[in-house]
Image (cartoon, rainbow, N blue to C red; front, side):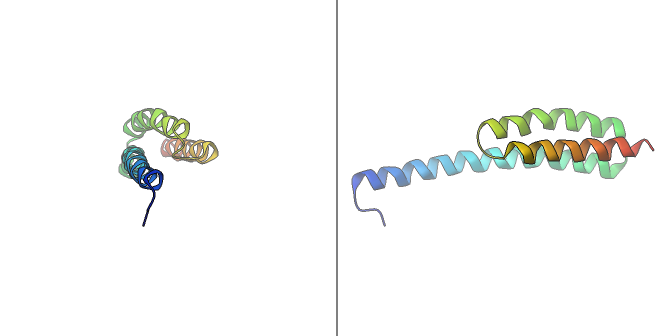
Length: 88
């Protein structure tokens, strides 16, 4: 356990930061889940709309350091490919 005052302060800061990051990660996952559900339902228009809403959330998570930029780009690319495949 933290003994010095600076270590105790760091524990408080880390706890606050962890809570913020957890809520941001949860928010992005919710948007991604909506896209997945729309793809599963087979509705291309709804899936496209959900992806358009999810993209800025993913990019925001990247700028905040929650996700790596390549991971976000890969997710967007794969989801858009799956949505495009719905029309075929």
